[in-house]
Length: 254
Length: 138
Image (cartoon, rainbow over all chains, first blue to last red; front, side, top):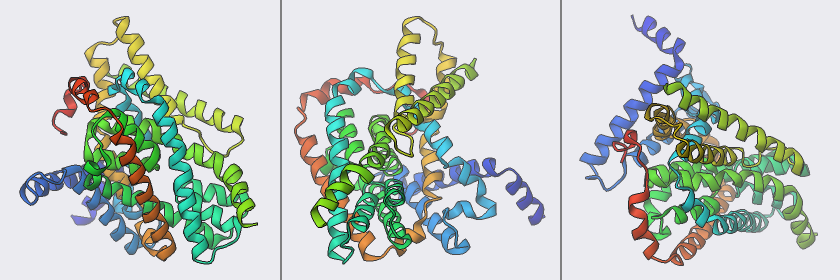
């Protein structure tokens, strides 16, 4: 019996994922209503449950894809993978008010640039204070503080060592997780209320996964505005990291 | 037909990714530059164009809006496949640089958003979305 059920679930991975995620969201909605009296958004709880399951999956299998590495939950990998994630993000653009997006165009570009340069400086400075004082390591770890894709792309381009690359990816992952969990908590401090503020957030907070999950847990209506800017974040970082930022770091530390 | 909406979304998605790859190649980077962002802009323009020409029946819209409403579940699935173990194993350098980077950016976000004139908000309230699939999610 159990084997037949398991076989059905594994063979229909994506369908299983829909059921599992539906269950998580149902559960988090109940937790939000009963335990926090609606103060903590259901989506925020669902994302935290997702991250906790990812940790559990990671310790069980030793893989790098959280729950998706377990055969029973392989469909989660497809459902939450880059393809469907980007498909759903693009779909949210259908609700964008073009006039709002245009009004915030310039401030979006400025925050995008700040969102690349500031985390880079902070990351590189902390790397330096921990003894990673060569320009290549500082640049790679600094780039990791931009997003976890910019880090390894930059590191590969300028020839960083594997342990520095791993550190750089870890930095980006921790950042994405902090943004996912922290955004709903800090929403009032950040002033996240309007489309313009969401675009500023998208540019500065970086990482599509962090921004999209953080905004989803704060206010679903702000998602497309933040995501619209954030999707340029990785491209800009990969552009500036191995070039301008690397040369600037090299000029500073020799 | 509901598939027309989903197909429109798919065409915008593919075209955006394609243009993003072209842009990345033109700039000499090994990655897609803003492909999803370009796809979003294409979808916004497609909607405006088709709405003006009355080519967008409700059923077609639903084909897009369904996927927009599936966004949060997809994000939850995405959270469930993060590499939490290596993120937590990164040690103090990863932890400190991530926290410091987020803190600095949060302060800058707060400062920039405080400069926004508050009157803008009151105008905004009614212009959000008309997606019936989302009424529940809020």
